[in-house]
Length: 502
Image (cartoon, rainbow, N blue to C red; front, side, top):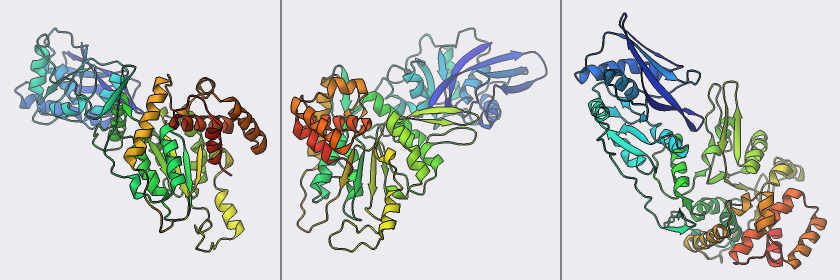
């Protein structure tokens, strides 16, 4: 029996699959066992044609291919090359167990790229399960970004066979390539960022309070809700927020690239965080992920490490908004089905935008609101208190004025966010301020004597919940960082209080 390794998906992570083969005497046959999908069983015809097209005679034996473990469902055409190599190399005695092999075969024996290849290899690399791998030559440019893995690119089945016959002298096809972007080093970890801003805050005239809140949100990764009249700039600010978020490590950039592939896009390997903005008519399954037989990732999982934007927030289904409370609190999402139970990481910055009433004119000084008190109350009641309690910053937008002017640019705001990021990392924090645990709050959110008195007064006056107190401390910590202050002073706490929902 001979064996090589391949992989299949379970959720967004890869499971190692050992491809085993036996060629025994008996009536000629070719079977693939081990819960193989249709794409894998169809590989038999591709393998036959590829071998015959490359001057290999198909052995007149009973061929059995086993995909182990047998109780895991396997999907994808990446198993083609593994199966063909085991049949072609049945006569050699060299051990093939350390090799991973990925590739779809053409009928002429050419090795083609598979859309699942990049996230599979990245997941295996993150789990430290892979060292040497044979891949299609056309995939090398993408795979070169993945560290600590030797990649051997092949264009045809013949090349792959020759490589394994001479594996003692085989050399990797590529060296690891670095992310091409500005960066800085803190504690031996490199952080990358972009200096180009497709959407610039200079386009937002006025709205100084909202822009200040957006800066605080970006620096500490705080959830934020914008409330204001139609056309006042809520969506404009939300779209520009993406470009001033904190820098990314190499591993985070690779994870974002994996999510781009899962969403169906070509990965660009740029240090730019995700931005997901589902429509309010989207189904619960499309937002959170799901499926009757196999749970697939949704918008919440795809927003991991970036922004999840809900425009027209009250128009989303109440079941969707209530289900969003768990990932906003726990930074992960669980999908349970009869056939599978999957957990996705979901550490995102939530951005919401809403009108003050159904017609949108309640806060407009120049237009009359056409809504009754009952309609306004019903509109606002779509957002429950437990949901709103998970939003750190609530911003009421100002009226648009012809005298409004541009102020800070995205470049200036991003520079402040990077400065705060350096302060956070040099302080020894692993998480953003908004994601601090209770023990980390005690360690890093140190109040001055005056601010302790102010906090006690605020707790009594506003009857703050335990979550609200912690949230207030975390927002104040970010404001203090923007001021380069080690202690949280009274002014920082008062500004944090100004962003609480009234």
